[in-house]
Amino acid sequence: MPSRRGWLFLSGVVVVVASILVVAVVAGSDWLSRPMPLRLEARALSATEFHFEPARLVAPSHTAVSLTFSNRTQAPHTLVLLPPIDLRSGVIVQPELTDRLEFTTPGPGEYSFVCNVHEGMGGLLVIE
Image (tube, rainbow, N blue to C red):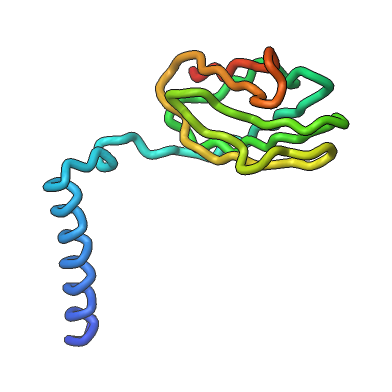
């Protein structure tokens, strides 16, 4: 049986968690209603010359994704997931280097990604 001190600590934790939930609900936060990712999906994407490989990526909806972008060319590239995902590589990825983007996929649909350095270089992220 927990000691009095243990019960007081547990009560304090419950009060703090309840307070955070009340503040979130009162503030109108939608994070409580969003589905939580069930697993981490790993995907790899490479820049080869002036196209992405593969040019079409597939991932499940509402899932945490770790996307590793490798630049296998002699030219710098960026990776930009267009709105509504609206996420970009943190830097211009120099030749032979990599960058990683981590995000939760939205609902099903087709979402474009591009390289901001090279016009016409793009691909499609299909969420199922």
